[in-house]
Length: 446
Image: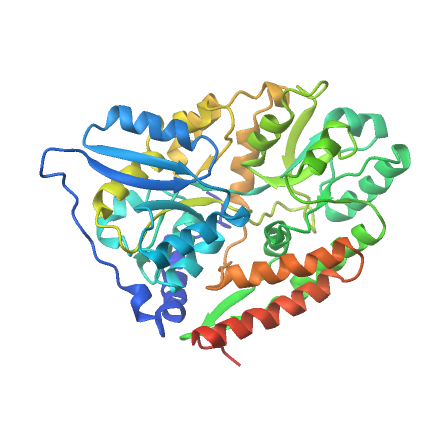
């Protein structure tokens, strides 16, 4: 691993600090009772499981076929930001949450601070934790306590149409300056085509850009939080993207919408700034459209100085709900799904997932299972591996990301309507986040 990767000592230290801020005034959230669901009556333990990640149905089917003592009752729910998190939160409040559910890294601290998930530290030993990338361990372990098991990491990557780039005479940009130049050249050559899209409904893409540039929105000082959504690293990314929007060099469309998919199919959008899981999304959405197979490729993200650097866009974990009496069985299922060749192969074989496994020993399994015909046979997992090594250390998600992202999403809508700016949105979200911290009794550093 490169020196830019986290050391496990740094991971544990950062996690301890974060948990102090999370748990200092929310003691109930940091409890957690470990229950042993052994199926002593001779019947299999039945776990309820909610999720939406691609390939999950196939994973559950393979687990059920190979584990007679545990039965997974799976319900597919909307993606988190599309309603899944609200459904889970409501179920937790009502006392009828599933035993285990998927949650993305940004939302995990929020669920922890609300007391919605169990501390599973007693069921996760060092040998299991050591199977995961340190970045994943940092984001799932708070205060030396483990709150979830990571499925994947999601380094940023740039997906682009090779044929449209060739037609416009542009090369794959290595820097953000080159990206803008390529955007200008592409628009001049093909007036209806844009190089990428600004998603007004999905702040996580912009957050990954800020992360890539070294921003740290949430840090801690003893048991208090510092919030900085308007620092110079974030402002640089905001100004850059605002100018792309103002100069009509990118599309402004909702993420994964029919409008966005149609623009890709018609060649009106020639690129997608996404993450490792995006290869499966593009393949699933565009694979049947004419002229697509073999014309898409994957490249590293442009960076500010040309040196490899990445934030992380999404990434999924398995968490055990606070009231589940079957934590042991839930962790056994999550361990199988995230660390075994069988679990990873079932997911990737579905043809819809291109997850980059958090358990790096499974990389050859994922690489072999994913059909890259859509990408001209390119070794896309090789691109992912290099991008994963370059994920910037030190990023922490805040304990109220639902509020932070909700505010950003509302204000980004004004960017789409040309009645507000990305900078305005960040200022508004900063205040909304601070107000929510105050409402929850969380300490904020001056």
